[in-house]
Length: 241
Length: 241
Image 1 (tube, each protein chain N blue to C red):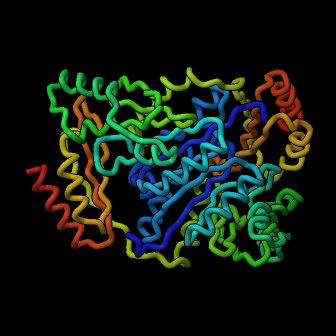
Image 2: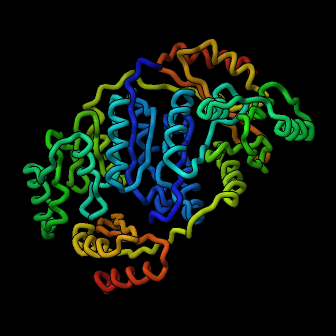
Image 3: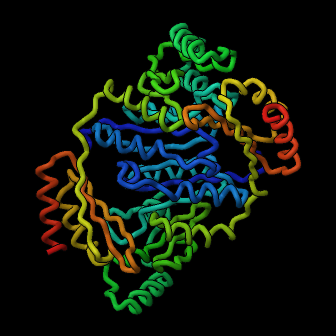
């Protein structure tokens, strides 16, 4: 599946690493990117630490076509993502006029003071393109191939919906699953032999237990639907008939 | 919180990156390690790819005191973690006698053939210590500071319970939360000023919405319970009284 562009995700936040919050953005993005034909090939989670964010962004943006980040763009002192991205790219960061205008109008409508903390959310690295936030206004941004989005799941999901249409994906990654009530160890040899015959497909095996009995989901993934269907037909003949 | 040893996790599996499976092991491990005083400072997720696993293991094991991996140690062709760990450490990997004996006895009891695929699960890198698997027998292993465990959540959790008592942790990382029905932008300045007074604590702010209104959870984390309680009392006086 080397015809696909490669994507990576960087999740930023102490609350994920401490176990306080269970991340859901990775699961959401993984599905959205698989459908868009821009599958994730790596994810990293780092803490709210400037050096850790800079190092991870720089490692991921050279190794992947697109990088998506989640978290750390709010108004509080622990929101340091925008500054870290500016450092990673070696560009300046300022309160940008268009982002200031968006936020000022938002807080006027809400009859809330547009104070220094809220103005912080208009700090955008030079050269970035804003990402629309239809939920709470404060924008994300794209700088080069790095797309910086909020950590709150509803806002993250809305931002992904704004960004993805801009990005060229490959053909959608399709998958088919055969569910068997047999253990992995029983089907491994034949399954491995079939996988070796189809280097353009990816085949994986995922065990489970049901009422104390072993079962296995055999999953075939690929972009060529006809080939996928043919391989699944052979798999079904091997095990399920 | 520099008195803590540092831990990292490596999640291995195409099914996480494609969005087929929602990972739960990261969330489980994050909580277990926070309690053990060995908090996670980084997580990476990579695909079932030899070079990607080797590179990630080698990057993580030099930068952290302990590394925990999840996934890829079953009997099928896509289970390549044990071989990748052996490559990362530059050691040989063989069918180890004690692991073979455990598995042989297990399959005899189950009256199932101990075939080549199942024997694969006895392949252990030279110099590793086995990790007990009370659920399905096939062991994990520790090699140096890298602890290699299964991806199936019940087995992963049982293996974590076997491994953690062996590892020296620091004092447990404690946390207290103040829940406010006020937006982040309103409390950011005072919260940031308080955080600056307590460099030994970590303070984070996590917004939410409830029935259309904005709220914020303010979380203080640290190992010194008296200091944590004092800081929380000051936070409460600032905002909640």
